[in-house]
Length: 306
Image: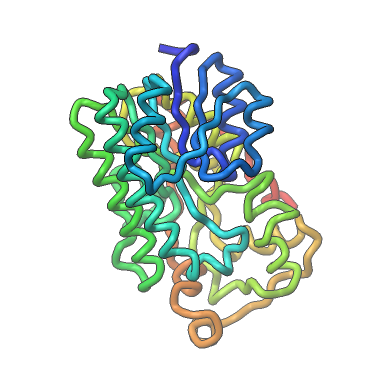
C-alpha cells in the first residue's frame, strides 16, 4: 500500500519533522502534524500538511486529535532534545518524560482510534554488539555507564511499549545519530561549535564506533516503513566509524583544528564516565535489513573523505 495514506505525525517540530513532512507529501500522503506550539508550523502548512497544537501530556486532547485525523498510521517522533548536546544530561528528565508519558498517551490514542500501524523513533546508536556491527537482534546498552544506561533504558521501554500494540502493527526505526540541516552535526550545529572550541577530545584510542544517518535519508526510510513489513529496522548509514577516525574528519569538514587527545583516566576526571563510554565503547549498527527491506540507500557520511 503506497501513496494517499492518512498519517498522524507527532513531534513535527523536531529536526526530522520538516524533511519527513516533505517526503510524505511528495509521496502523496495526507499529513496531520502535532506540535506543542505554533513556532515553525507555518512552513509545514505551506508544504501541504495540517498542524494541530496539542500538548502530548494531555491524553484526552491527543486522542481527540488522532481520531479527528482519521489516521491509518501514527508516527511517533516525540522528543524534547536541547539544541546543544552538552545540555542533554540536564534535559534528559524532560525528554524521557515526553517519550514515555507523552508517547504513552499517543500510543494508547492510536490503539483506541483503530490505527493500523504505529511507527516509533528508536535508537540505532546505543546498541550492544558482542563483535562487529549490531543487527536488529542486538540489545540496548542498558548496562553502560549510568547516564548512557538511563538513555538506553528509555529506548528499551519505548520498544517494549511498541511490542504491546495488540492488533496494531508496530515498527521501530532505530535511527543513527542525525546529521544534516538543523541537527547537532552540521557545520552550523552545536557539535561543530564545540569541536571548533577544542572541547571534544578523542578519548583513548577513540574506539567507540558511531553510526550516523543524514536527516533526509532517515525521512525517506520512514516513508518506506509505511508499507514495509512491521518490525525493527536499523536506519543508519553505510559508514560506521570509530571516533578516532570520524571526529578528526568532522573537525576538518567544519573548519576546526584537530581535536585534542585525552586518556581515558583524564577524560573520566574532566568530562565524566558517559563521555568515556561514548568515546571508547559504542557499537556501530548494520543497515543490511533496511537496505534489503526498505530499499534504503543512504548517502556516504559527508565528512569521512575530508
